[in-house]
Image (cartoon, rainbow, N blue to C red; front, side, top):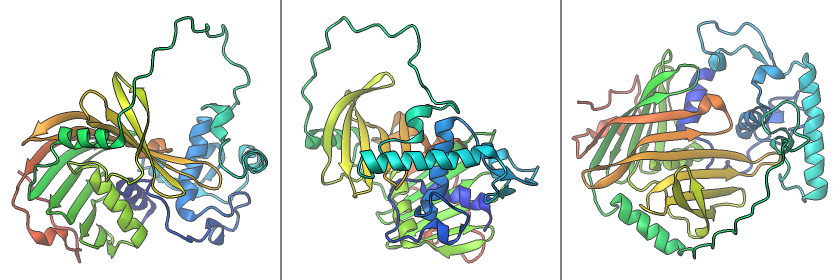
Length: 369
């Protein structure tokens, strides 16, 4: 399976559901690593993307690229020689990473409080001074904070808002999927009952990538074949599937309403939950409508926190349930940002059970008009 397919798989699964326990460090396979030696392979590239984004640069600022495929877009063209140290910025980056790790170890007990973005703020040159002229001091009194509702009240309002009591045997959805670098594809989703899910992403020039869930098992299929999902991938896919269901997230047992925050032109209740020692999920619920506007997952690593975010927009009533017709997902890589605009949403469509089975050859076509 090539690098392009892996990139598509990562987008389908999405970062943020935590990592598999006791995952071996990337340094076992990448012996040239000198600073991030304890980082798991699954966190290495998301971490490097976050560092690049913190400085406002691309991978080639530090890394050598030889003979990329001219028929591919910049992010998918390959040709990277990761272990080469030809470029001075890569050597400087190692020193900066050691500095950040030392500050966090000595001042914050090893917690990743200081990061590259703390100083760089999207620029190669760190920000030393505040802008001039200085900001005026606030003269108006701060508005009185409104009392916050309980987590029970916010969650109940959300379930009522989306119409969670409505039940359909199947849900079939189709969307356009737009990415950076002029990439345009399509995305199809099928639910049947409570335990079956299938999603297919078509992003030319590559063939389709399809994933399926049936009960406790799942699979992945592309032009190069199919395989069963590993346990960590299975959990990631279950979480990704919830984005397209009527209820967008399982309610964590320890959900707490932390504050109210302005999100675009909407006031939102900010609900925070620690789902594991390494992973925190933050949900933003519209104060006026009760609908979920944003879901953000923060995963603590040994060096820099990783974040993934899903925004839900353009809610519409379809057969008595409210569904977002625009879903925007993003993480630390600009090449992974996806904007899905749904063009078709249908309930109780006749769906053959066989489409949820792992295909031996190319996956069967999804049901369409």
